[in-house]
Length: 129
Image (tube, rainbow, N blue to C red; front, side):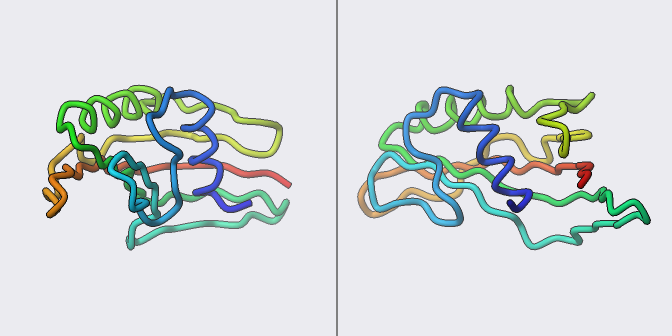
C-alpha cells in the first residue's frame, strides 16, 4: 500500500464526506472530492532494519455547486489532519506530523458553475516492516 492510500483511508474513515474521495482526479459529478500527491521534493530514508521515514506534500480538492459546501468540507478535512503530534495508524505505520501548508483556497469556477477549492498538506511519516 502506498503512503497516499493510507492518507486517503484515514480521511475516509475519520471525516464525514459529501462524496467518495477519488485518487488523482475529480469525478464529472458536481459534488466531488479528490486527493493527489503533489510534485515535490519528497524524501524517504530506509534504515538498516528496513524501517522508513519520509515526507511528501499532497492536496485535497473539493468541487461543489456551493462555495460554502466545498470550503466547509476542506475545513473538516483540515481539522482531522491537523496532527502536530502525529498518530499511529497501526503496528507498521504512523503519521509523524501533518502540517497544513495552504488552507482552503479557490482554484476555479467551471462552466457548469461548480466551484473548485483545495487545501495542501505536508506529511511526515514512519513505517516499519
